[in-house]
Image (cartoon, rainbow, N blue to C red; front, side, top):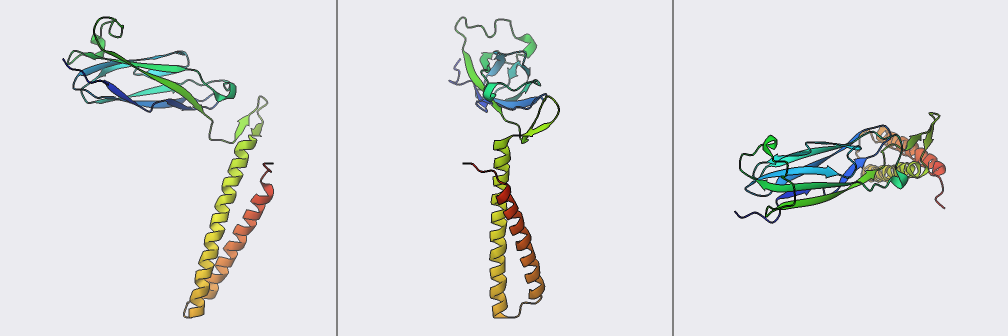
Amino acid sequence: MTVAKQLVSVRPEELRFQFELEQQSYCDLKVTNNTEHYVAFKVKTTSPKKYYVRPNNGVIHPWDVCVIRVTLQARKEYPPEMQCKDKFLLQSTVVPPNTEVDDLPQDTFNKEGEKTLEECKLRVVYMPPHTSSEILDDGVKQTNPDQALQRLQDERDKAVRQTQQLQQDLEILKRKRNRGGVEGFSFKFSLLVGFIGITAGFLLKLLLSTPSTD
């Protein structure tokens, strides 16, 4: 029988986990059968005690899709420099039609004989947590300087954009007033000036509180 060059496609091409102390994190792998055959798969990892894989093996029907959830177990400490050397290997091979996972022989994924056995290697990437603080051993929160600086800069940029938009709205109202016939202009004008004042004050506060990057 003729078998396609690539039995399955796997997305994403790497396992990315949001790493946070004492919290589980997961990544879903979408495995697609690219053939008209039944394809069996098996997932292996270099660190089986750190990850929970379900299903870790199975059979995908022709042109069908299987979603594999890989869960990173809760960790008590951060890895050095948030680097990870763990690897995953997804093996796939063609099996007879209507084969069920319980029917797979023990040597299904052995590299012997003339059967086609494909392998897809996946690396692991740890992503920093979304929060900008870390919990110390004594329970006190310590702000991460880089993350705090980025947050302040984002808020500052947002305030600048809002101020620019309000100034544009103010100019539009001024032009309408000059043309005459704008009902309630004084009230709208007062509100707009008030908003600009509040935003400008918030912007000034952010500028003064943003740590220097020099």
